[in-house]
Image (cartoon, rainbow, N blue to C red; front, side, top):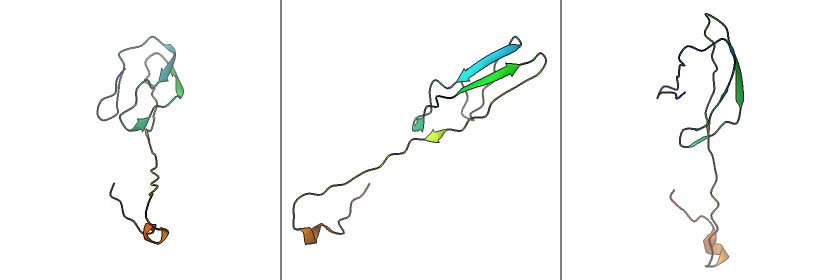
Length: 79
């Protein structure tokens, strides 16, 4: 099953029983969830899950070399 741009996806009719749902691709810039959701489908009922994307975060370290120590402080960089 693939979700649309609104994050919503719907299956066709399923036989009653237990199903396992796991994200296999995440949107660009987001962490792939390893969580497996267990769903129990009962005759005549609709069941679902709610999941939240977690943004991939990182950090930058800048190490400036050269020059005298008194000139190294307060250097500015654009990202």
